[in-house]
Image (cartoon, rainbow over all chains, first blue to last red; front, side, top):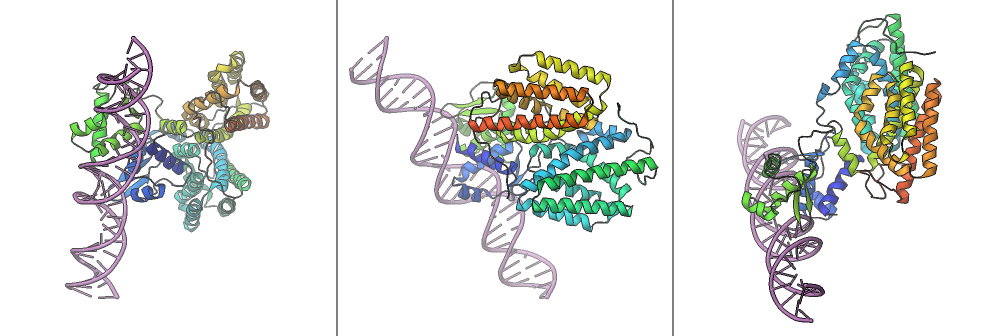
Length: 252
Length: 252
DNA sequence: ATTGCCAACTGGTCAGACCAGTTTTGTAAA
DNA sequence: TTTACAAAACTGGTCTGACCAGTTGGCAAT
């Protein structure tokens, strides 16, 4: 195979496998040329190939950067039907949590197994940010923490899927934060779960990480359900008041 | 804009506007450089960009040619970056299977729990269609069967997510069917797994359905891996021959 | 007419130079 | 000491001309 293709392939693989994360700056062309033992022209041809595929973006005088995956998906554009469904049918919240339970469990498992030093650093950063934020308005940090773990899974499909659900997830996180965190017992429990997830991932314990992450999501889901049934929901961030959310068909 | 981008843009427009037809040979790099008044290096960078986008193909000693599959068709749209990644990096296959294992497990669980009479009827129909189809070309029925179960989960988020991965899934199913089904033991095992999933869902046994579904996907994944390592893959439906697919970062 | 080789294409790679933005930094001025 | 600004030291962008490596076609020797 042509060297240029070989290089572009290797670089892409490097990105996929997590050597380089989205938004991250790539080595300069001259560095790459030296390190990979080829001419700069080749490096440039390889980079243009990746550019054509939307894998990287290049800025004159600054460098090349890994593009955030799934560039086209443009915000709410994609899941807007789901978003609508969500605001119309509170049940969608639990539907999402059902899915999240699986995916986040898997993400935590893989992260504990595959996280690089850089990943661990990012996760740590996200975690401490989460801890230091006002518990009543830390939806964003909360989401960032989970996202950092997902990215550390080094599974592009997983990243893609959860990214597609991002807006929806943010809504549910907001809902749970707004409703759960004001209650001290809830807040403490959730905080402890975050801590244990963090520790398991850092310690490289896949099974534990998965179990705890799933328990966490399940706990949030159950807690929300309980609150809703009690009619004591505090804030409904797009979570309709409609007390009795419909249930899916249930056969006995 | 950079000249290279400019050139690649102009060339692509030329192709799209019909100046160059599919299969047609493009002018040589040296000709383009002269005619467009830029250096050959620039031409090469522009061509690599088009190559990355799949607009042209280049053959050493022969020239560059307009790719057949090009324009307008807009095709499957959403997951095409992932699709590209998949065709280029076999590892993505396993990434997808990792995700599928979780999602299909959950789908089977919910289906067993929530399926209505109509759902059961649909699943039964899909299942018998799968059984009666030639095992060597039943990728479509196979996928339909799984999809019927997903829809019976009555979880719109789950349906949405798996629908977004539809094209990718079809590819993996094709790959597994093509590679696994010709082997009798494999074929029988898979067939038995399908049967047990079917029975568990019909019998309304969520835990069993989930367990079997997950086992099923895991089995396919492991079998594919084995075959790949043995280098005995038969058909590679976009599955690169490259024997040893790279592994994600692994710590320990 | 057939064979075989060479010349003239094609793309692939390299080296080194210089231009053009961006960031860092060190020094001179306040 | 602090601030301002210009030079240096990055970064990517372009050019040149050379040489290597497949492909093809024609011409010469058989």
